Length: 64
Image 1 (spheres, rainbow, N blue to C red):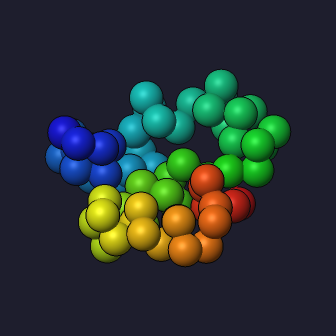
Image 2 (image 1 turned 60 degrees about the vertical axis):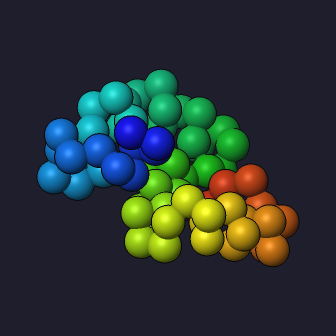
């Protein structure tokens, strides 16, 4: 896969135990980032469009 957004092993990105675990929740809380939301956006609009969107909005991650 190019990103976890392409994964077909789980029904929903938020069901992935590799992505959603206690350590990632702590890091997300500290950094104020939402990896699941980022991956859902990538799945929705694609990698190139996501990169353009993030560059235009000058963000490194989608916030919680």
